[in-house]
Structures are given as structure tokens and as C-alpha cells.
Image 1: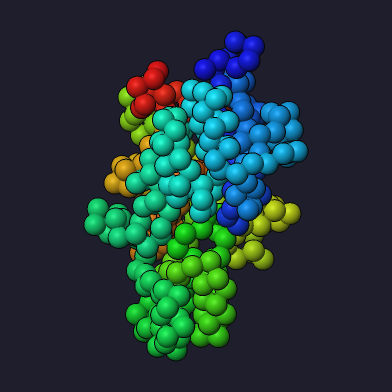
Image 2 (image 1 turned 90 degrees about the vertical axis):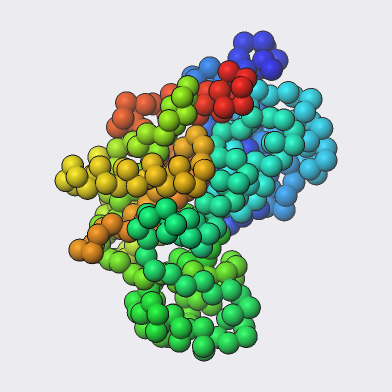
Length: 348
């Protein structure tokens, strides 16, 4: 449907949400809203609060919502608006895991990005690792510790990690992104502390630690054919005092703690290898629209860490930076994603 002036097709932009990544989602959503008009679309922001209420602010001020409604009234309002597409700029649970995607499906609204199945699969790092292994995509050895495991036999669970994975190891929650709930445990005391912090967010994945060069590869589908293509490889170089590329390094005051080099200064054969693995991950996880896969490279080889189905879309985010190096402006990037969603739905 055209907007009220009849000039541009209307695109909903979902942002916020109930996860711990609410704030970064608000930044991603605001950036998408800012750049959609130049791509030929009229943005209509939909802000979901931390307690699950829906607000419909002006595109000029996405952070200001005067009135919020429950999901029933929100659905009625959205159906009345009759948008051509939804752009889901949400990260973590309730946004990146298939739930908002399912809501769009039930309302028969095409949406940017992966469907319910691909979103849910990639969101769970343990299930994602199982798919990597089955497809022959190299990934660090890992052990899943459920919250029940850690309550029932904490000592035995941590003994298993030490015995099968070894220390140091990476400890992460299975269903959050943006490096939330991630830590490196160098000894048993740190393992106990980091696991205790991660389990607050759900089940815990402990992975073999492969220190080395950190690379990430964005993948963007052709809007017409749907063929996934790798954008330029990015290398993330944490400064010495930051340890690894954590949430604050990406989005917070400490954003200068890591340098992001695009295109990465790596040999052509390595760039081709990680690009091929990123496209392969996109395919085997049954993703759509776009994704970004993270890697570590050490003397033993390339290790695939995780695939993000809704990468950050702030002006400081990695995906827009790689797109710019490839010759796509932010507006062209969001326009490509909307066109792909419409094509995939048969509405283009």
C-alpha cells in the first residue's frame, strides 16, 4: 500500500523488543527508517517495548512513543495500514529467532530476512553447530550445558568441559547475539564464574578456544535471483586491553577497542575460503535476504563460530561497512533487502 500521500510503498520497520539487545535494535531500526525513503519506500516504525507492548512513533522520532498497545490492537492497526513489506531490525530472542517472522506470516506480510525455520535454527548456537558439522563446515568442538545440568551436577558438568574441551575455553549463551553473555574462561574459577553469568540467559555452550585472527563475512542475496553472494571480508582487531570483540566494543562507549578493517588484509585464498564458507552456511541454514558469519583463523585452520540472520544495521555496524566497500550505499542496501523480500513473496 502507498503511504498517506500516495507517493511511496509503505514498509513497516520493527525495532526494540524484549531481549537484552533492545537498545541496539532501536539503533538499527532508526538507521533503516532514515535510509528507506532514499530507496523509494515510506517507513512506518513499530517499536516493541521491553515488556512486549507496541508503539507507532513518527519516522522523525522513533525514540518517542506516546501511546502503546497490546499485540491484539497492534495487529489490527498493522492490518489496517496494509504495508507492502516489513523490515525486521530486531536482534536476539523475540526478534531474530522466528517469532516476529511468524507474526508477519500470520498477517500475510512479506518480511526482510530469513523465514521462521532458518531464523530459529541459526539463533540457537548449539543447533547451528550441529548443522555446520553435518555440512562439513569447520567449527570448534563444543559441549552443551543445560541450566538443569548446572543445577543438578555443577561440578561434574564443569569437569566434563575441562576434560573434553580443555581450558581456556569460550563460554556463551546459546540464544543471544552481539556477544551478550560471552566470556573466556582461563581456569576453573573463571569457568565457574562465566558459566554462572551465561546461564542467566539460558543454556550454555562451551567451545574450544582458538585464538587467532577474527574475520566476518556478510552475505547478501541478489534481489532478483536470490543467489547469495559474499561481500568483502572484514577483519576485527581487538586492542590489547579488550580481549575479544564484545558487546561494548561493538556498540558502546568502548567502540574504539577494536579496529574493523574492510576489506581484510588477508591472502586471496583465505578470503575465498571464508567467503565460500559464509555462503555455504547461509545455504545450509536455509537463510534468506542476508546474513553474516563469524570466523576465527589460527595455525590449525579456519573455524566457523556463528551465523547472524539479522546483522546489526547501525551506522557503526559491520554489514553496512562491507556493503559500502562493495559499492552499495546504506539506502541501496535496505532497498535491495526490501526488493528481495517482495520478490521472494511473489509481490515484486
